[in-house]
Amino acid sequence: MEKVKIIQERLKTAQSRQKSYSNVRRRDLEFKEDDWVEYKLEMPPEMSLVHPVFQESMLKKVVRDPSTIVPVETIEVNEELSYEEVLVAILDKQVRKLRNKEIASVKVLWLNQQVEEATWEVEEEMRKKYSHFFE
Image (tube, rainbow, N blue to C red; front, side, top):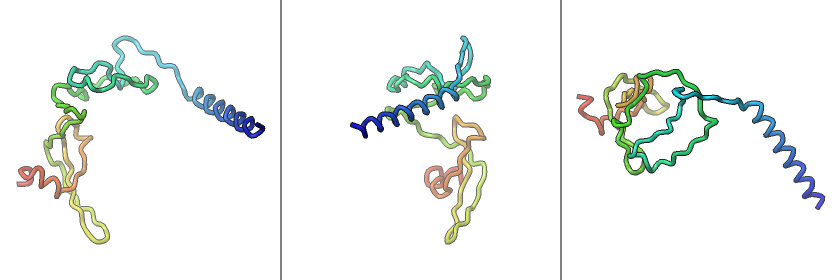
């Protein structure tokens, strides 16, 4: 019984410490109608399988930038709640040298993405999928 009491006391201490730490970092957020936040609440009927719950403490105010809005109609979401990226352009090439081999990569711009969000992909794989871009 003595060990149980010690464990309970230590748990209370740890919980108290965690609570005080989280309370210091927590800040009250207030939103008004027409404020923009990083998470939308409305979802189209095609995404009805997505659970519409989010953690409100994750909300942050954002500066409205119309160029970052992607219309939902342009993204086809399948039943597994994913979508296939479509290659728009190859922006750059590079060859990374490792100890025993070289890996050729291409910087790829995808549909519904901005130039800043372009990704580096292995050139060989991109040639297999999108050979017409390399002609």
